[in-house]
Image (cartoon, rainbow, N blue to C red; front, side):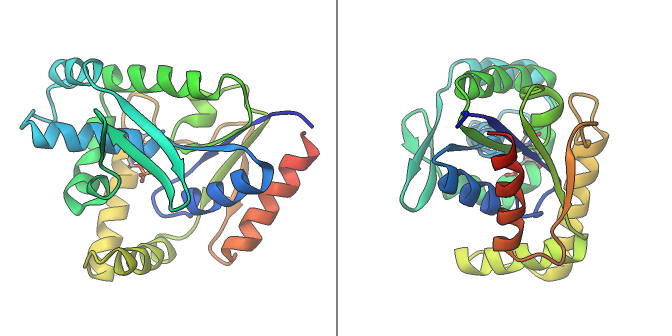
Length: 222
Ligand code: C5P
């Protein structure tokens, strides 16, 4: 069995993290949530009142920060400068600001380097927006996961309700559509399906069905 790299990209709310976690667990691989890294940078910038358009300041801030992803029985935990910020990085404020921060090339360069180090030995399932196109160009399996915006908003609503964050379906739909637009239209590593990625529409699939589909493709490549 080979320790392959699995890249999963797609728009917000397509089910990437939920499904990536299941796939990683089933294969005994490490799950790496790159969105959490962009969220941690955004959280710190908001805390420090750094202007989200100030690429130099954000890059300097990030260079002086440590972001660690640690697996735990409750899922992946995110530590920023040693503090557990796993809940804070999911706030509405961070969610609505993260695409602005993630658009800066100097922020991306640093995080991509970190992500490549984490995946260097294989045995990873990494999810994000530019994993197949930039971070792990040689990944053995590349998946582009999507679902209709209505279905993604519906899933986010259920997710938020579980976390105790309130929002209306309509607001979530708008937020998701706007974030997708920003992520897809930015100049630095935009969200786009890699030529060699397999498209997986999860609109009508259960979590388990989507995970099984990816596991089957993974096993063929191991
Ligand atoms: O995956 P998640 O929704 O948590 O990602 C939050 C944001 O981080 C995305 O909307 C995007 O702006 C940014 N991101 C990115 N590249 C990645 C992962 C996330 O630009 N590889």
